[in-house]
Image (cartoon, rainbow, N blue to C red):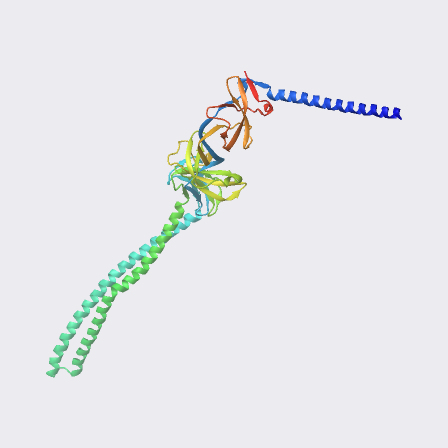
Length: 419
């Protein structure tokens, strides 16, 4: 029995020994790991000054913007279309030509229209001749009516005198009574005829004016047809109609065209606007009146948002930009441009250049350069960001220099030695 108890006591001592040995080993390993981890954390990496990008914290304005490509568009564009069915016989100008309202771009031909024009010109001349003949006829008729009245007045006077003589002869019974009665009746007849002739003479101008108005209307109708066809014939010479530049021609020589066919496009290059194609996801931040900078790759033009198209086409929204009155010499319609729309502006804030590898976050770690040989890991609070800059809320001061190169692989080091 004693032997059994001694054996159990020896086993307990062995278990305690192994347990204590295991705990000691675990503790030792933990201390070693902590030492090496602390050693890596506190150790300093090394970077060459020639291989890194350094930026300086500065005070300034941060502009949150939206960038979009686009084109310059004329505010005044003239689409030229065929007014008559015809055939293109010559392209007088080519796209890119500077034009005035009288510049002929295309010459068209229409034999049927020319024949119709010649025919109505002849009809117009005939109508004019008929009007002239009617006027001559009216002059003759008026003179004849005047003569008729004068003759009737003479005949009436003769009849009055004849009746008076015959009255005396009847009293003296030289002539029979019926001859006197005939003289009286003849006087009454001539009096009536004279009254009718005088009435007709008075009415003649009104009648002649009515007839002249009818012929004048015919002449005016023919003149209107001549004018209309003359305009159509003139439209066979397709003119620019405005000052500007010829942008495109959509027909070729020898092509048969119908009325309404699009022929060419002319744009006024002195009055331009920009049309930007903004991604739908960014369009929600844009409002009318926001400032815009248009880059032509040679010049910068200021402008303001004047219209936002409500429609979405291929994932983009069209934004119109009203440009300054004075434009650079290189601008022209359809010129490709880039636009920067200023959404918000924060003035007098701490800024640093935005690195290429930047990922948006509220906090970040920068390595602040203390002297020319050492950079210390610094926690920084981040505010707003723009395309080129980052707003710094805390952690850095104006004038501090920081490493802007990608240091994500060195984040375990609290300091970096620079050489």
